[in-house]
Image (cartoon, rainbow, N blue to C red):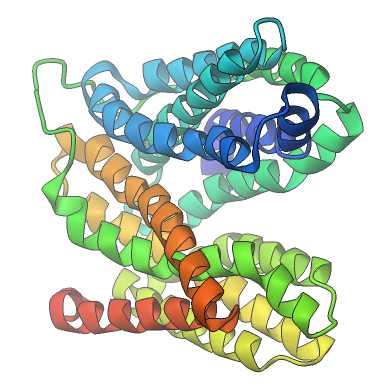
Length: 371
């Protein structure tokens, strides 16, 4: 494991830098939009959220580029988009440039992470793929977790913009020396969207509705019950990292279908306990179950997709798979918000439970025979 981790470290570092910069914008961007530009709540939400739409588009384009041009080129392009986003965060030209910055930042994340996942799978031996993917995921989650803290410490969107632009330079230097194992298939014109990844992507999307409920509605649910929510998010993030590092080899050892089942059952259990939680202990238990459950579906499904995809379309298939994450989180957040407004905050968690149960049924009907 150590040798593979060393070989992959520059790719993980690039993913960490990308998500660190993405997270560092979170504390200051909404405040800057409201106080400096007088943007409405709707406009603020649009500017903040358009990065997810750009990331989805970026994943689809980047997958085929990584197959035809190589992983390094696409990772470098992703870092370049992030650097450009940092420059456009500087308030030189007003509100329109912040919109451009969000689009560029979303594209950067989509390009970089899509190629990084494919690069990781290329470097990993057959019996260590989920474990090595967990190593990459620890870099992604580490950046997302530390980003808001760094953004608060730096202070102010202009300072954050310079940080985002400058932080990519050491990552570019690092990936320059990292070997590529796969050979680019320059003459192959595969699809932008891989049919192989449609069913696994749907399962990934359904499993991630639990994350949308956790991120968007746990604070509201716990506020109604007079309970703090900060500990729940710390416990959730800690269990995701734990699940993808300490237990990261389980999909390799026990099989991806079995661990997909396990993850979905844990997500159902965690959402159910969260609905019933009226004490800090039960809240932490629910968050731990959700975090551990969340850690298994993606690497398990990535293995399934990798096993089925031709070598010339591997990055395209993985880009399609991860694109379903952006799509389902965005749509389910809107749907959960509408249900919560109509039936109460608990409805968001009932939606998450229903989606995880639906995913279990699909796995049983369509994938169980592949175990």
